[in-house]
Length: 438
Image (cartoon, rainbow, N blue to C red; front, side, top):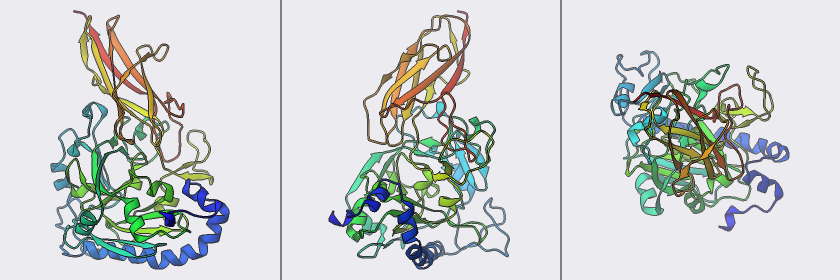
């Protein structure tokens, strides 16, 4: 474990996810050389793996490209992916493929695999377990190349339930509406069980050098055009060493579906979903955050609040942990009840790196609040189940709202802070029902 510790204050700041300007500038030259060689080779490795058994994509496939621009490897057609999903899954976009269910369809304590949202930035590579490898390189004592079998035999397997949520989850609730995937106000997240090896165990086996600050993940997905930038994200060393951060090969006790990263993906629970790289082929330990499209252009929010409609300021930060949030999963919107009925309210709450300490329910637009009952806490990054019974006092339309409070005292806002890319919607969830005469 000693190789994990840095001896200077600058690195300690990096471990906390705050990279000082001095550290960043000092490492820029070394990082440029590192990325020019290391990152390029990882990207080439990814292309090589997808091209193990090249096949042409039928022209009728939703993922097809013109014959003049052949894909570097086989892809899983959208139609095949959608056929495996639950019928309540709604496709939002086809290029790239995105789909989700709304809150009333996520009432399970553990999200079923076929109801977990889909968010692709590129195409879905049709990878095989045989021959798939994961390369660990960069600021390590020993570069390693591991097969799936190596990972499963070498490192202890752990199973954790953890939140996975797209940064743009709930985007359509913002006004004005930012560009991006039109996630429903209550869609774009899930909380399954993940099985894999702890990333910190893999890094320990490779031996992390003292200058390490960030860990980058490389996937094997590719775009329809060769100019499409690869999806590469990096996370601070502190999060990489967190015991719930995994290199996963299974979800809910079964191998990962191809659309969710088969055969390997990272799971960075509690953080935006883009940090949990699918189709993982490379891990690179760096002395500064990775420089690339999905770190520097996408998945960023203003460092300070901006007025709705403003452009992204130069002072922005990469998206990381989700803020406090809750959703009502029962009753469903539009449900009908009779006067005298008891209405069972249920839902889920979560808070990124923090824990949930309280959930409250209101029937009068927040004038008064009643505390909901909460299930015992589960795994660190699992959502917290809550329930409450309400007795309507009048007939007509009734709006039920919920708000959560986390362990740092953060209270879920009525409306989330607007930002140009529409990330981190965590406004209070509203469910309208009708109460009829007996």
